[in-house]
Length: 339
Image (cartoon, rainbow, N blue to C red):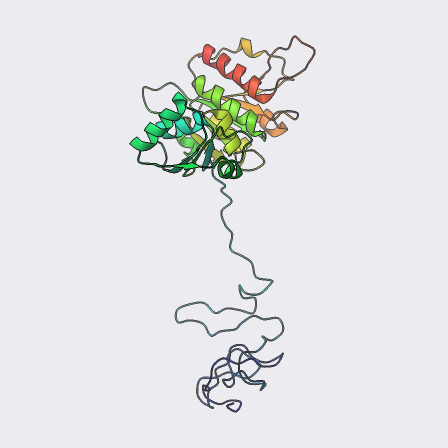
């Protein structure tokens, strides 16, 4: 063991007692070195000398190292310490959609050819069906690997209760910006958007997306937080419509509504408490956005205040409301009829 204050020791990194220095590299007086209580100090072997080896950092600090040339010195609250502040990371969640389940959903995934498909799993015990023949042919044309797997393996990988013997694995659904949804290409109809205000049920969102695509909706806006995105259950219920409707996520729906109104989009909230029936809307060919809330709470207060107009679906029975999938389907086709 080299003496305290000696040069670089012989055998490697050492550990000193509590209160000693960090990784230790000693240096003779006048050379490159640090005192025993500081960062690099002392001798070399796995020793116990107070000045040597790798030892605990002084109270309140992490590993103190000399600044790199041209860099910034690290203070006592280094990124290794418990009090260090971690760098902020993006909270952007994306749309999802990497796993697609159900025969029609997988067929449309291949047919749309909108995103890369890694492979298709098909249960080996399926009875012949035209849709399965379509999937095989489309996979072959796109040069996508199709694997025949046991039913147990496929069901274990599935995230829905009835994948119908077919799974697809693909890149996430590509996301567009809100600005792209607002400004359509010349010659195309004015935007017809659907805004989801806190819809958390995958079956309802999937059914809504299916109806929206059939009604000619040109874009979907989903909140980044407190709302369901494109899960396997959504893709299955949507029956492939997620492959054809442009979608985006936004940090806050009230802000998105403000931006839509500034661009001349007429924002209509579907609210069961509204006095005006949806049948009385005079839409013409203008750009329109239809806001749909979750079952129970409906659209939120701030979103309701930001809408240009609130409408309701007249109810004639004993129940006071429809689920959002059914209400959304009805509203989508009424807006389509009015346009």
